[in-house]
Length: 228
Image 1 (cartoon, rainbow, N blue to C red):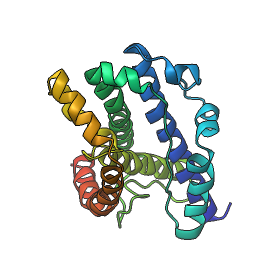
Image 2: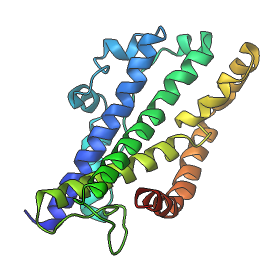
Image 3: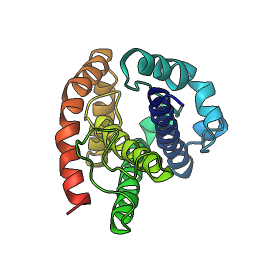
Image 4: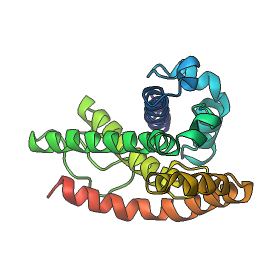
């Protein structure tokens, strides 16, 4: 398989898995907290089909086209929820929202621990030149090299997804975090403000401008911890 095609398959597979886990976490936590909306849509699952069916553009078409055109994955997904439930239980809605980036953090830590285990076992090592796809390397042409690349991508991508989604502006999950600290009345007023379309646009612009430049410096810190 061509190297670029193989890299694209690894990136898309990591994107699909990480995004499905993120949305399934939203759906599962909402169900546990009293909102069965996403569960009725079949999204309390790691099966990608219900998630793709809901967002075929963001889960399939745009990620593949973005890779082919620029060598980078861009995409999105969503899980439905009851607006009336969120208004009545703002703290529960905040926990539901934060479950997504928390899941990405768990995936990033898991990938990092597996890389560390491979390093301790002598199977992988630090790269000569670090990129988002090569936080760890194995013997060239071996299955371990492929696994090291996949774990590197999973770690990088989930760090990015966690940071991106924790930007405290709508429509990103981090905008819900203050609801955990506010009184019911203040939480309702805050939620209404966060629904303003201008803020939603500003949130995406700020996240795309701020988070990607931070990724490589942060991954250097992660690599230092992995091989310390």
